[in-house]
Amino acid sequence: MQQIVLTEPGLLQWKAYDLVFNSSTEDEKQNLLQHIPLQSEVGVDYSSLRNLLAAGEWLQANLETGEKIQEAVGKKSQTYFDFRDLVNLSQTDLRTIDQLWVKFSNNRFGFSVQKRILLEEGCHFCENSDYNTYFYHPRASGIRNSIYNTYKKLGWLSLILDKSQFTFEKAPIGSLPTITGKDIIGGWNYEITLMYRSDL
Image 1: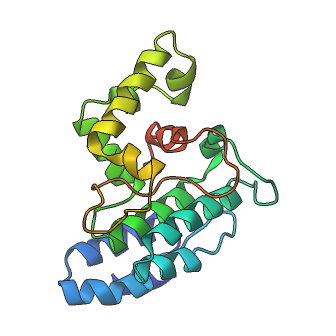
Image 2: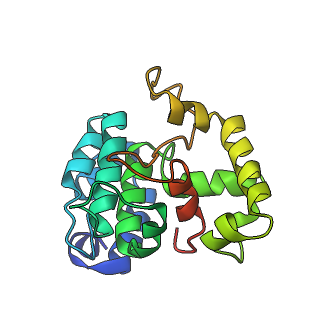
Image 3: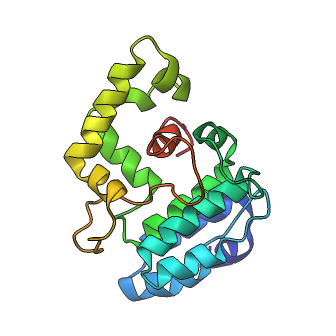
């Protein structure tokens, strides 16, 4: 199994890694974090994001996440990327970014953590629909307001608007990452676009 973790490409490597990681002691998990898969379908190097997360540089890692996503969707040379570009983010790259956050934060942060919490809070936008529902459905404004109010209730919106008081211990679970970086268009809608993906 450990050989698969180190050498096997693709989803099998992640499944093997998760099996080994979840059955390990806390000390063993710390060692396994050094071997976390950094897979990318488009050649993005995620080592800098891994290093920031390993060092507990959460806000810097948050900025790095936006930069890496922009690179992964093919907009590195542009001044911004649109939230709809996230439809083109590969499953492999999304998995790598998400699991870096999940593993290093001990399940406090990550896109999959956000999606789980939002579903628990009754946001059903993830089921049997896509991001077009969120923006273009006849009831889109009501859907957006519901999600906005949920973000506010969970304390995520406060962190998006003001990170000056951030501490790892006090930050609401699921409040990171928020996709920031260059002159992005769409604000907090970026994360919502990801929530619609069935592969998260």
